[in-house]
Image (cartoon, rainbow, N blue to C red; front, side, top):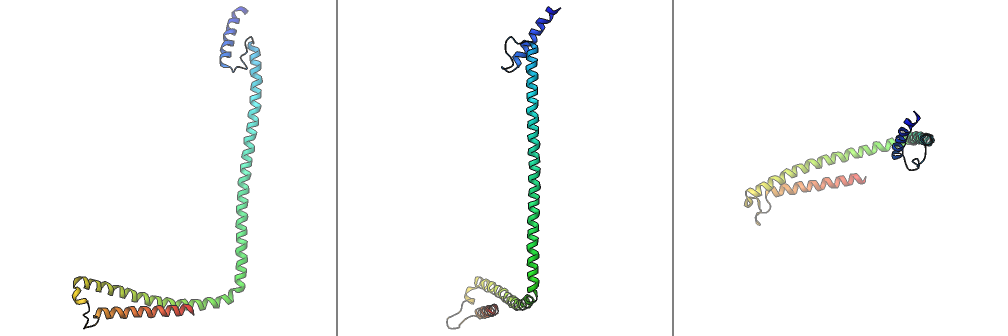
Length: 180
């Protein structure tokens, strides 16, 4: 019966040798020798896998620590920023009363300037509509709008000069207010 198993073992050996790397498929090795070598290789591969898993775990731990450190640094930055804000608020509180009077004076000046600007804006809008009307009149009937040398400026030209002069006056008032 033992002779019946040898050809099967030989067939298995040949099949194994064809699938194994060269260092494991040495001619003349028995099946048990190949199995022992494979078992040794298995242990070596398992040890390498454990090392790889330990490295992966160490890398994951390092990544977690890095993220924690980033979070702590971010939190520390926020705390520093808030500390600076509190310090600045304290300084401002000390200056607050004197600054309040300065702010009131500045607000009054800005109010006057705003009123002047609003008036100027109204004048500009008025002059814009006047200019558009004058342009339309010139396009419709240029001969009536043009001033004849003997007659002097037209009514539209006089109105335009008046608006432009009031704009210059308002601009001077604004500049004067800004200097004060």
